[in-house]
Image (cartoon, rainbow, N blue to C red; front, side, top):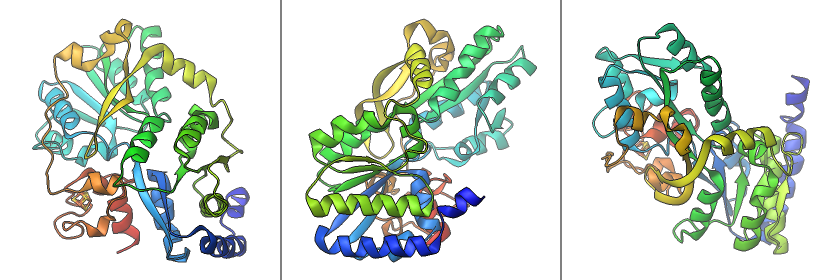
Length: 361
Ligand code: SF4
């Protein structure tokens, strides 16, 4: 705890906050996007927005994997469950609305929906039910992808053939480019996701920062990490620079995690991916390579992940692009609450709407 306490020291926070206020006067209006859902939660939890100058706005990005999962994907998972297949998933996915239902609803009607704490749970369920089929809902960013993919390696080693995955993997760097290209977003700098960066490495952003001339800082989740990240972004804006700063050197290396990257490359290839409320971003997803399609639930069971119809009143897409704050959605805290969410941003523990509901009402 001593280590964590150091990153929550209020005296140091005050010093950094004073630096932020001084730099803000030189930097002018700044819209800084935190890309990661865990950053969003930390910023809300520690009240960081409230201690920043008015000219500095922290806006949330699309880095919550549950939030960007398409309604069509939920529909496919519900369809699989309807076929009697065991669906294994992280708990956040249960309440995410599809076109007309949720996995929680399917479970209440008797479907085999298992909440997992690790992808390995899916293997255990498959081993315990050898005559049944098990599908793991493989969503997530670069942080989550390696542990999910590793179950395929273990399944092959243990000759477990009744497990497969429904992929909706997403990649952060192509999303950054899409956000930078999006005129409505108008962002001046990025607080970059620490755990994703631990996998892909700081070097993965250098081309983006250079080409788009947008500063980026990799920062951890503790309050001082975030304040230092904001300070470094403002410093660059004040000096007219656009560089990549790795504030999270205690974890993130330039080249990332080579073992994890090799594992991903072995099983997966890039593909276009659909992001809920945002649309298709070229090259922003990963799907199984041809030689591993025996693990692909869409191929194995003939389901398609297309044509979802989300509730069009939900403005998650605008929230995830930082165009509106959650409390600007007319449904926030009226029709849409964590108990009865209309959109995924209110469901996930990393969702912007859930963070606002919990900490900022
Ligand atoms: S408050 Fe609910 S309906 Fe509105 S954007 Fe957030 S999740 Fe969607």
